Length: 568
Ligand SMILES: [Zn+2]
Ligand SMILES: [Zn+2]
Image (cartoon, rainbow, N blue to C red; front, side, top):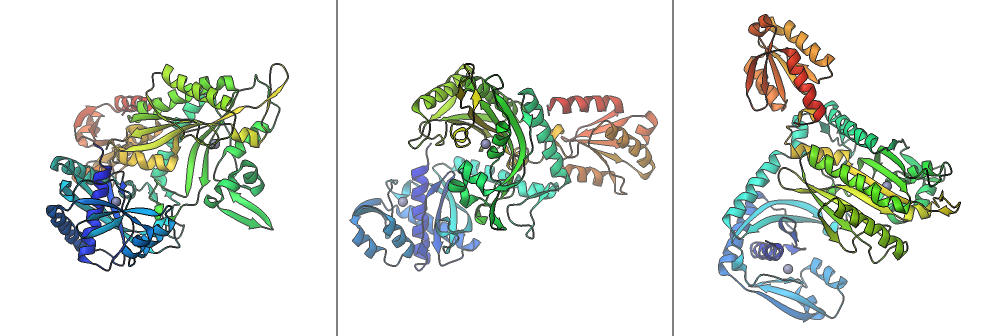
């Protein structure tokens, strides 16, 4: 069901409860969000005990069951009504029109457009989840607000299900697992939003790059490499200086302005432009694993999911108009193959069309949009049409993927672009000798390697499939006597390219097994006297099942097959 009104109404009840307990606390805003609601306050830092008290007060209000009453009043009246609420006054000043609407619930009044429930009693189950600090209206120059988050449901079952998922999500938090498995680190001295991959995290990244290079080879992309900095002349030419400067790192050296790259497109365009192109050369396809840097407010940074330095699996195709459909079809297929086939995620496709503000003729928009539509339809890919939500420079296809906890992540985008070719005056010579302009297609399948890795850590809860596991096998000699044999087994595994470790510590077998379990290693190879004598191994998998008397060669063959298929 749609809970937006329900949650927004719950936010009002939250604010009403806080005002009852601490009348001097000032009110910010209180919207419904994707899952639940929050309300912002100024003038008190809330403790865990506070949240419990507020929750109790909310239940009291819900029991009293006051109606949500909408009233329209003049701005003047509203200013009087909210004279002690500086943040509401600020919002009021920004509002257009003579009249504003307010909502009353019992003795609580809020400036609000609505709509709302009929009465507070409709809220059945409510829980406050956490509190954190956030700048008023997201601006670092503004005061710091205390934001209380909550959730509410009609049924107990929904609440229990939600709390269970929340607990599971916390257990899977990629920052927590990242530390536990030693995958990456964030360092205050380095700066926020700049993760450093540790060796095991780098192994995962290398596997992702390897996968994408295979995809790129199949689709005939040619890999290029471009620098991290360019003169601002380039960014002016591309239009980023004008439109995106706020998000870029720009600096001056010897009076010349430079920008750290936030996009790769302008560089790939240089390669296209480096020689004359004929219609027979097209499509031209370039790919790059390229780190770009984008300024973010420090409050919005989060582990690997929201960072300043992100590495795109970036692709650009320069194509003739009549090639759009065929090219996009290949990209759609490859995207689904990877997200669904390899990572076992459900996929949702969205097609965004011409917005009001746009460049390019209606004719080319229509042609391109129809190409995208018929491509999806012929492939029998279901999609949601987002009318008018394309970028100003072209229509696009986005892919959301659902992880094992049922959360959607926007990962892949295929973006048509009529703007860049125009800005950079790209051309090719057509059959009849005339000069024509190619269309550009931007594509990133994984999106950013950092973010994708963060999503995968949570998707798999750190139990990566074999091919992606930083350590695939750990060899555990049962006693000191078996260390030499264990070392031989370990050497054989490594010589076959399997990522293996040897635990030659003096700990007990139980302890060694527990350690390997905590590291979520797919296979343990256990060797004792019996194995040594029989020239065999015992193999324990992640589910805890152990098989004895296995020949090492058979085990290796089986592993290599699974790794190659990226099956489990
Ligand atoms: Zn409201
Ligand atoms: Zn691009």
